[in-house]
Amino acid sequence: MAFDAKSIPDNLRATYCGKKAAILVGAGASVGAGLPTWPQFLEAMVAVAEKQNVVAADKAREYRSLISDPSKYLMIASGLKEDLGSYFAKVVEDTFKAPKPKPTALHEALVKLDKLPFIITTNYDTIIERSYRAEVDDDVSVLTYQDEGELQRRLFAQEFFILKAHGDAQRAGNGIILTERDYRETLYRKRAYQHLLTGMFTMFSMVFVGASMNDPETRLLLNYIADAYPQDSGPSHYAVMAKEQLTAVEQDRWFKDLKVQIVPISSANQYSELTEFLVSLGKS
Image 1 (tube, rainbow, N blue to C red):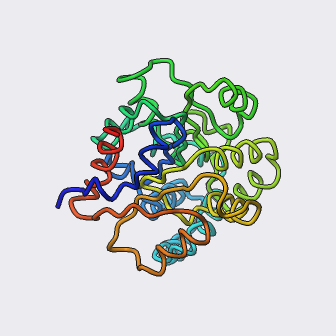
Image 2: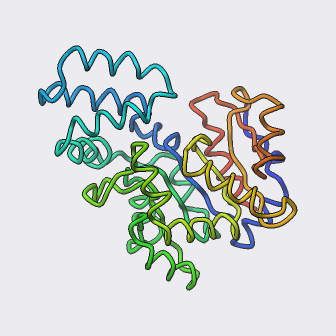
Image 3: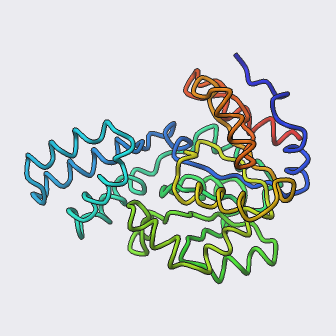
């Protein structure tokens, strides 16, 4: 079944055309390029930890038994990152940079959206910027949460950029946000960055594509904004999500509590409707 273009709200189309809608890209957008899901990355970390003899076989088995529980992901990541020590940066590079995965049809559709003020991604991989450099601008600016000054300058100058909110596999030494401690430090110690990120969420509509709505940083921001500002002020946000995985009650609460409107797609054919959504949005 093809994506129904009528499911894109008129307000989202108008906001995009006015350059007031940005895309937030999550890990789901990279799976089609062969990059790992959360459990697959954790499993890879366990394998390296075993190979380098920094965890015993019994502990490795315990890690693997916990990977089946999504609520334990951050806890497992914390333990593995600590166990791996200096090997961790190499694992990130080998997993997300070294394979040089090819852009998918989704990435090709993404870079054709020429009315985006910026793109935020929680991914560590380099697919989005490589797509831009090949198709649009070979000098596209790529920032992380470490680049508060340049982020502020580009927002003020209205210059396009890609923000890798959880770090960049190209410069893993600058910090990859993966564990609960990493999230806490970014949320509570990087004040300038958090103010800028809050401003982005209050001045632009965010369109979540392939993103988990349970990301701690995203949820905290959405809850803060919903609590601090009247419900009838500021932009609405949008999440493209599989209708098979949502209930009517969940959709209702997302919209009424956090001003996040769901754009439903089918999960069939490896979420091919996600790409069709971006193509349709671009035709606005």
